[in-house]
Image (cartoon, rainbow, N blue to C red; front, top):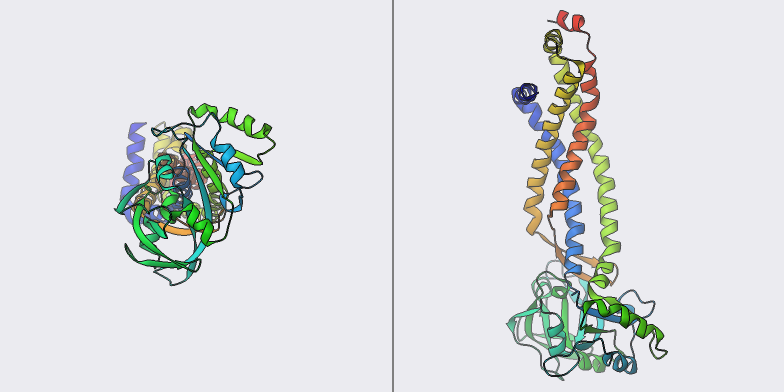
Length: 389
C-alpha cells in the first residue's frame, strides 16, 4: 500500500503545473470557506468575551437587548438588595446601574456617520465587575462631570480626537480623559460616561440595565425565581455570558449561511477542476494501469490509489487555503451589530474547529472530484489497457 501511495505522490510531482493549478483553485475555495467561519467565530468570541460567568444582567422583560430595555429607579433599588448578590470590600453590593444610548460619530476612513454605543456606568463598580477592562491611557472620568473614556476601537476608527479633546453630543461638550482596552471585547467599541450625567443630558429618567456579581455562579436559578415571584419587578435575568452570546447569534448565523452557500457554489468549479485533472491522469496512464492489473493488483487497489492521489491534491489545496486564512487572523473589521444597531469591531479568529472544518471540506471536495475518475481507472479492462501502449 505504501508503494502505491508513493506512486500516486510521484505522479502528482511529474504533473507539477497541473497539480499546482488545480490545488490553487481548491485552495481559493477553502480560503473563502475558512474566512467565513473565522468571521463568524471572531464575532462570537468578541461578544462572548464581553461577559463574565460570575455576572448577571437584568433587563426589562421581553426585551432582547439593553437598547430596548427600560428599568425604573425603584426596580433598580429592589434588584440591588437581592441576597444572592456579592458584597465588595467596602461592604457595598457589587451592582451597577447602567444606561445605553446610541449616538452618531464620523468614521475616519469614510467620513460617514455610524452608531456608537454610549454606556452610562458607575465608574468604580462597573470597572470592578469587568476585570478585563483596563485603562491604557489617561484616567477614569470623575463622577458628576462631563468626562468620557473611549474604547480603543472608537479612538482608532472614529474622528473623536485623543486625550483632552472634546466631543459634542446632547447639546453638551464632553472631554476625553481616558482610553480603555477590553481585550477585543465589545466594550472596545463603546464610550463610557457617568450614568447620572447621561440621564440628565438626555433627559432620560430610567436605566437600561442592572449588572451584578453573584456570590455563587449557580445562584442565578434562585435569583430568577425571586424576581419572577416579585410583583414589583418586570425584568428578565441572564447570565452575562449567555446574554452576549445571544447578541451574536443572529449575525453569526447569517454569515455562516451566506458564506457556506457561496462556498458550495464556488466548490462546484473546484470539484470539476479536480475531476478533469484526475480524468487526464487516468487517460495518460492507461497502459500503466493495465500493467498493474497484469501484475496482480486488484481493482480495489487501483481505485484506492487514484482516490489517494485526489486526496493528496485536495489536502494540498486545503493547506494553501488555510495559509491564506492564517494571514487574516489578525485582521480587524468593523460592522453594525444587527441586534443593537451599533458599530462593533472584531477580528477574524482561526480556531481549531475552523482548521478541522476547512480540512474536512477540502477532503470532501477531493473525494467528490476523484471518485468517478478512480472508478474509471479501476474498471479498465486489462487487455484493452495493455493494447494502448
